[in-house]
Image (tube, rainbow, N blue to C red; front, side, top):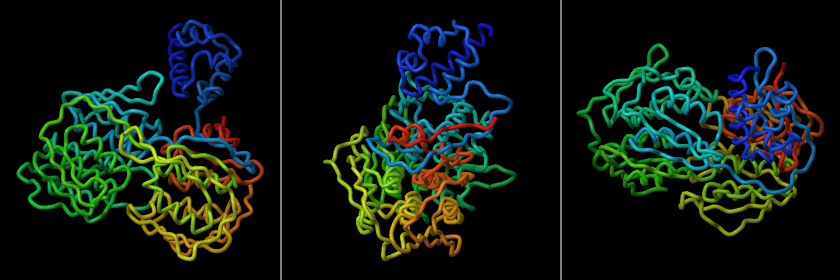
Length: 509
């Protein structure tokens, strides 16, 4: 290896070690070498054998060497064991992506603390970097520093990254203040059926935005003579619709009233962030938001998003399906109360700590300890509703929990066209799931879980549901092509292993 290669590999190893929150001494102990040897490796001053590179990769859960083309990542699960111990809930995926988009409103430096390092965030960072925004992860942390350019260059946008995330539609709200005309690639993300962006357009027309969709792009023009003259009534109480309207209103000088707004967790985090930018927002946590915007925002801001209630629900489902007692720390209780009330009706027992506050200074947190015990099917069907109802993203986990309960449960996923269909993948690991139509399934429990090899569904939450079911299935299961899980969960395999699970990442050679 020449000095250039050694230096580049050393930098990769250093970054992977920091991502794992590991010191040089800790890595040295795992490798059976000295801290000074690790320092030399990271400085590019140490020759490396393929065996040593492989060992480093295994300990850092990173692939530095591959034979041929590196294929998709898979998971191998040794199931049938109980979990134990404690685990912290990571900060919110959906808040992270909203805050990254909202950073485009600010001409100053934005620092986001303890951000989720997930593929969805990586895609947006690729887009932001391609248009001139400078981003860097601060050393040995999940803190991200964002510095905007004097003018973003949309012509240089990384279209491939943009097409892999639906979040790109949340660029409309910030960018309509910067350009009289621009274009964005069609939105991607999970395969959950056809989702129109018309509710976004209905809201943003109040700010003069007009969009035509042709040949793979959204072509946007802005009429500066059009400004909100009356309350904006959202035709859909959607989270991203509300966020787009909020970001547009934040840079509109004057008062904007948004009715039928989502008060969900990621919307509240966005509101708290915008207030740090100097925007006054009345009605946070309600369905009517009054935004007092600023024509120009140029402040250095520091903000920490709150914890993810969907990840909390995922961990709770893992405890239920494996019949385990674990403590889930930093649960945002305000956004889990309906779920816990329904689980109580199904017979679940749990203990909650006293409340404390998230790093954003606003969101209420608790530590929750699960108590294993028998469950019964609910009398009524389980269906989601906009907050404060049962969270739409938490519904798939109730399919998994219903498979553990005595009796028959109907799950009605009325929001998405395809997601209920993906829940039938649970049949491959032993569940009794009957598809009634594209939105409804019947689940009979309890389930005798069995190991299987399954291709991961192309939607985030159903993919995690299959993974969690495999934790309960005795024997070896394989879940193939788990990119969609990495979109929304950071280090999930490693964190489950810390609770006693056996989940191994691998790629085909």
